[in-house]
Image (cartoon, rainbow, N blue to C red):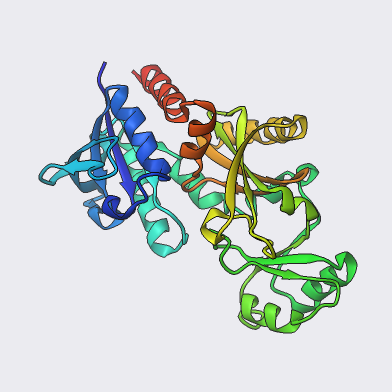
Length: 318
């Protein structure tokens, strides 16, 4: 049976063809027979309580010079789509939240939304990881300058970061000498007006910040280790890190086992765990990446695995 799939994403003309995970997922969906429809956040609206969008029928191609084509847009009830992929990159701002409300209405009207809109709102990618303290390094979420300073006195080597960033933006490494600690805390907390995260520094970052992809509660058996440039503490590819695909370790698999039941319970079908050394540091639920790099190294076909899981859910609904 053919299904329809809508994707809500950033402008497709501006993506990086060679690295973009959303494009890889769309190619897999098209290969599985899904009819594709393209939306940006600005194309979504509620009319008399009904979730609606201005969608374009879309085709995707494995061609770096022409990776998509769009037909003329048309108004359509979002609930009539079989599945909707929410793939908009952070920042997780009010517009993102409003989009999840619209997608939640589409869900009530019959669409399956990946990932579940309520879970996207509930699971802040930094704070959600703290739900699994057995997996995490020492961590503090606070806007209290005294508490944040005390965390540094206790742990000496500390990472401070905003709760809504991505790609390594706004991350500061404060070493034992405490140089610039006051300025860092003033800037990140906006002088005590917003919560931030403090995390004990994990020296194994030099060996890579591992992205582990979890599809329907099961780990892809390989990860992408994002290795920082010399002199950097951020492994993010957007911050200049280089990617190296690797098999999961026993500890990686243990962390996935701790987290996976909660992911399934919350309707988080496609998730990226960030692991440094032996520790879980973040749980990416909005638009996990690194599919292309892992696929290229190990022929994993992660998109096909996700589409298989989605097709199974749709068959159960019918």
